[in-house]
Image 1 (cartoon, chains in turn red, cyan):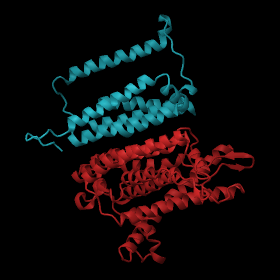
Image 2 (image 1 turned 180 degrees about the vertical axis):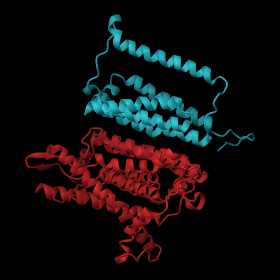
Image 3 (image 1 turned 90 degrees about the vertical axis):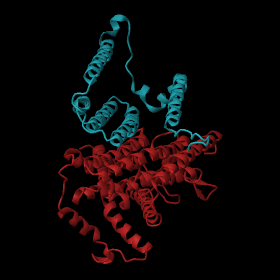
Image 4 (image 1 turned 135 degrees about the vertical axis):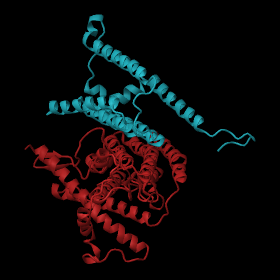
Length: 346
Length: 174
């Protein structure tokens, strides 16, 4: 096996190991965090602080009865939960998680897919996420499921525009689709103390991206596809046991992937000013990965915080916000950034 | 390796394309079209045009086909009724047209040099992002802007058509 193959496999293994940890950890954080905010106790019986609750849940998912509705479209019904994981597990391939390393005289980029189309590839993969929801809703042969997936489709294609436009604005001054160049662009300080993160000059874009990310991952306050008070559970009403767990995992991994993208675009990715990345390759690599993980973890905490703080939107409010507020805002941001780029301020 | 990938995705795109036109259920047709377009994107990558591949997935499978599905699900179109009046005739016309387009493209590719028509093969440099952007912004600027204008006109037309009619008492419809 050549050195390059080994390096690529190692990078994929690192990402996979991290991504598979997201769901169990986040399910604990979500429930304990919600309990904290609502002044309850939360799960506290399994293990210290209820930390092993995720293990118990996994066992429960595996041993529960797996029901397939007799009127369901079997092929699509079985494909949908598998497809839920595909975009979530593949989006990370273009996100850099450390500086270029020099291992035994060979240069290694900490990026699984070293391609010029970077962000576009990620957005393309992310846009495929809607199919699993559509297939789940259609194949279940249940009106709540169908309504949920129709909502999901409308919501995801509406917010994708604002999300993409805020990403484009970031790419303008960088003049590249590559996320490692986006990170390189954000290194250094402004006025000697302010990190050169895109979040400061492009605060509007950062805000638009954040809100659109909530809508794209179907998180509260935009979780209308699974609004339990009206749609039972939306598109995954008819799913049980491990199939439901796959949707659950896909949702949290998509949150993590979009957080990683947002952090890379607006908050410097694996870079933090003041840290020394020039040491031994193992130290530099670990440092980059640790910084990125910490930033993504903060983002995920924010997702939880928002979920337990805001009520759900109505669907017309959601569409109004997406088309009449976020889209014009992202266009204004794009024009502002273009002007600043031409003026040479960025 | 490359040949194996090409064979796999060529077969996949062709067989799913057959399913698109032959399946009775429109939802299955759209989903097969998704498979076709994604396999074509893989073929684009093999040809050294990852940008085209990403755009294909982003625009066609990520947006347009989702809209198709949305409309089909919203109208709740079930299984297509077997024999509707005129559909057989339309199918025949469509098949003849498609065959004509396909054979003329193929003919130009293989025998075009006999009639003095030849195309230089696209190089990887020509389809990479930066040369493509430069070409769009310089040599092809007018068609590019015209395409943009056309899309804008379509958006405005759709908005006007979808608007609720104004109320008879003169108040603006909302």
